Amino acid sequence: MSARRLWLVARHELAFNARRPMFYICLTVAGLIIWGLSSGNVSIIIASGDATVGGKKAFITSEFAAAQILAVTVATLMSFFVAAAAGMSVIRDGELRVGELLHATPLTPAEYVAGKFAATIATILGLLAAVIALMLLFFHAIPNAEMADTRGPLVLTNYLRPAAVIALPMLVFVSGTAFALGAWTRRAILVFVLPIVLVLAGFFFLWSWTPSWLDLRINRLLMMIDPSGVRWLGETYLKVDRGADYYNTQRIGFDVPFLLSRLALVVVGVGSVVVAGARFAATLRQSGKVKAGKGAELDTAAAKAPDKAPAATLTLGELAMHSSAAGFWHTMWQVARSEMRELKSQPGLYLFVPIIVFQIIVNSLSALGAFDTPLLLTSGTLAVNQMQFMTTLLSLLLVFYAVESLERERSTGFSAISNALPIRTSALITGKAIALCAIGVIVGAACLLACLIALLVQRRVGFEAFPFVLIWGGLVAPTFLAWAAFVFAAYSVTRNRFSAYGISLAAFGYTAYLALTDKLNWLGNWPLWNSVRWSERPVAPVVASEMPNTTGTCCLAWCASGGWTITTSRGSGPAIYVTSRPGS
Image 1 (cartoon, rainbow, N blue to C red):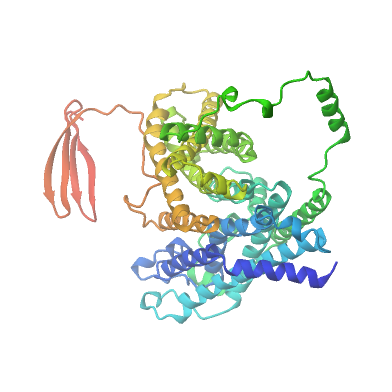
Image 2 (image 1 turned 90 degrees about the vertical axis):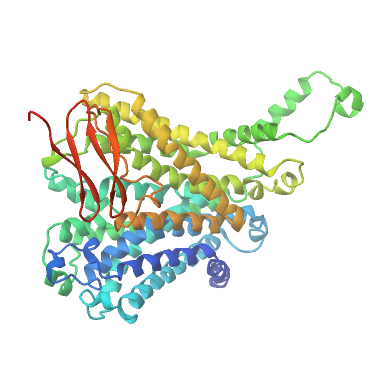
C-alpha cells in the first residue's frame, strides 16, 4: 500500500467535504440548539429538585450535561449527515463516471477505500470539534445574564471525556456501516437505513421504555445495545436525582461493560469498512464479464430462431411511426408508472417493512398506563398512538426517497435526454410525487398489519377500520404530502442532493428540538406530535356560545344530553373543566 496514493485520495475527499453545504447546515442547527440551551433553563437536561423557588441549579457546563447534549445531538442530528457523507463517497464516484479512470491507474482498491474512510474519520473529528467549540462559545465566552446560576467553571475535560467515550464511538459506528453499505450495494437509500432505525428505536423504545417490573439484566442489555449512550446515562445517573452538587462537581464513572460496548461499536464500524473493501476489490473488475455458459445459450437460441425480416428493411409507412408532444396526464402517468416500477428494486422497503411491523408490535404490547399496568388496546388508541411513529418514519424516509427520485435522471446519465424532451416539468414532478405516495401506502399497510397483530395478541377488543381511516387518512396523509412538497422545493431551489438533504434534515431536527424543549406551538407542529387524543367514550352534542376573555374568545359549552356543566379558567391560559352534573 502506497502512503502517497492513500494521502492523495484522502486529501481530495477532505477538500470535497470542506465544500459541502450540508456540514455547515448541520453546524448551524447544532449551534441553534446549543444557543437555545444556554438560556438557563436546564430542566430539560438534568432534573435536580425544584430550582424555580430558589433551589440550587445543575450546571449546564457540567460533564453530565455535556454528555447528554452530545449524546442526543449525535443520535438525532449528526448521524444523518455523517451517514450521507460516508455512504455516498463511493457511490458519488460511480455516478460521476470517474471510477473507471481511478481504477485504471496504479491505485489499488485497498488504498482507495482506506483513503476515503480516513477522510471521513477526519471530517467526523472536525465536525465534533466544531460542536464542542460552539458549546464553549455559548456556555462560557458569550456573556449571558440568564446563565448566572447555571454556568459553572470552564473545565475542558467536561466536554472531551463525553465526546471521546459517548459521541465518537457512535459516529465511527454509523460512518463505518454507512460506508460499507454504500460501497457494497451502491444504492443511496440503503445508506440511511441505520440512522433512521437508530432514531426510531431510540425515541420510541430504548430511551423511554423503563417499566418498574423490567428485569435488571434485560435493562442492562438494553443499555449496552443503545449506541447513543442515552439509556445508559439516564438509567445509571439521571433517573434518580442525586442533587445539583453531585452533578456539578463529580465525574461520570464509566463502568467496564459500557466501555466494552463502546469499543465494540468502533470495531463493528471499522470491521464493516474492511469487509466492504474486500468485497469492493473482488467485484471491481468483474462488472463487465459475461458467463460463457449464458453466452453459449444465447447463441444457440439465436441460431434456432426462425428468420425474420429485420426492421431496417421496413419503410416508415410499414413501421407506422408517429411523433407528438405528450400531454400532461399522459406524461404524469408514464413517470409515475416508471417510478413505481423502480420502487420494486429498492431494497430499503424490504428492510423497513419488517422493522416497522416489529417496532409497532413491541411498542403497542409494551405500552404502560398508571402504576405500570398494561394498556387496553383498541383500534382508536392504536391509530392515535402510532400516528407519531408513522409521521416520524415517513418524514425521514421521504427526505431520501424524494431526493433520490429527483436525482435519478442525473445519476443514471438520462438527464440530457429527459431535459430535451417536450414534456412539462409540472407533469414530471407530479408523477414522481404520485409514485412517492406508494411508499406511504406501503408503510401504512405495514403499520395496519402490525396493529392488527397487536389486537389479536391481546385478544380483548376487536378490529375497527374507521379510526385508522379517520386518523391516518385525515391527518397523516396531508402531512405526508406537505412534507414531500417541502423536500421537492428544497431540491428545486438548491439543485444539489446534499443541500436538499441538509435543508430537510435541518428543518426536521429543529422541529424535534422545539418538541423536546416544549416550545413547539400549533403552527410549527406540522408532524402532529402529541397533538391528538382518542377517547372510547361517546361524546354528546354540545351547544356553544362565545365569551370574551383576555386572550380573545373562549367557548362555554353545556352538554345538553348529559347535563354536565363546563366552565373555563383564565389563569395562565384558557382551560376547560367539568365541574358538576345534576343529581351527582
